Length: 169
Image 1 (cartoon, helix red, strand yellow):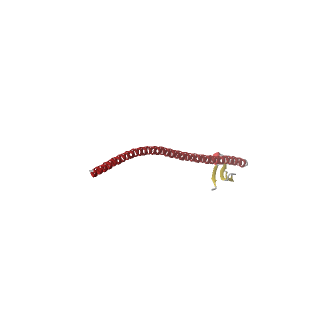
Image 2: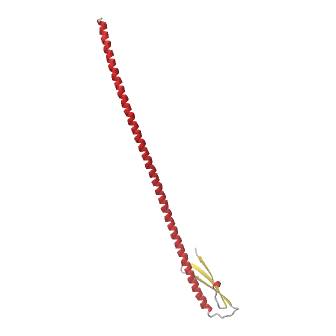
């Protein structure tokens, strides 16, 4: 019996050792489950933080896109305003030039009228005589003028004066 008692003691010791090992493994497994749950919670928090950060980045990106678009529109508006101002200045210069041409033409007409009146004084008042005179001149601004007028019976009428202005291009 001794032999059986020794084997029984040995088996009980092995059983006790296996139980202790089983308890240790269960405890380790439970600890591992707890650690895994903690990791899952940490990962969920990290995911939530990442999603929140991604949302903020999207908002920032949208805001930057809007700012870039607004800046682009502002530059386009400024360029359009500058072009409009340039166009207005060009038109003003053209109008001023045309005004100066007209003033020069009126001045030339006055000169020609004075010339006509000067020529008209010595002409006799013969109803049959018709004289045609042509005065050609170049005004100071480079515009040629041609004035044709007729003296009929020594009188001058505005309808008898034809002035043509043309520019040499």
